[in-house]
Length: 323
Image (cartoon, rainbow, N blue to C red; front, side):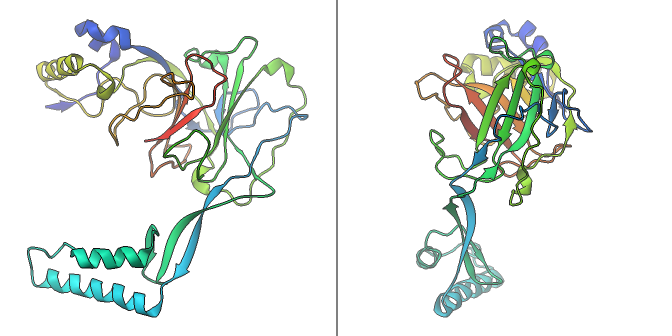
């Protein structure tokens, strides 16, 4: 059986029930380069008015905190490790298991910390800290309307700018179960920008969140939803179609990967996570930022950061998700 990602039009032609779920998307396809001020780009220069302050983020940001184990706790952790090694050497059926008593002891010693540095014997935590002076936001993406027909543009606006704070965050308002960069989006008219601001540069940025400059090669495609967002009968129809074609489907067919505007989100790492606006409406995917590639960002352990917007009122706060 071959591995294949079928074209959406082919699937819709063979499974007409998919047609109502089709959405337009623009694949951005970042490629390393030297974008100009008036180009659509990743991490390129932005048409940012000189009279408009560059956004700063004051957190709370997640920073690494460490505290050393007591000698007694260190010796206890070492003893548990020795006991596990001994069980493995004896090829016990429980060689790779930890006893309930050992688990309770480890939990007490870790005291909620996320990791243990077994060189320094320090507990490692992610703790929220604020920045009085603020951390300069990083230019992530500039898009011109001519390049992204899949997006909905406010009247009179033809430039979209996406920035984020190059830090992990704790407790962003309206963002449950999220700890990535804080994101801002600005629309503006290119014709109104004359003098351009030279933005400040953070000297304390997490390098994972500082993209490398890229030019874009936008192309419009048709996107179909992940299996989790389809009725069961259409999932079965897709599977039957793949069997007839001798195709092995990985992830969701015709749900495009990579940097894109519009389309559907994939749910390749988790089950479907409902993303709702504060008004109660189901939020709609607006932007996907992918890890790796020429842009070189790394979100969620080489995952995707997705920005959702309200389909009822675009002025409602963004919803963020990492997959």
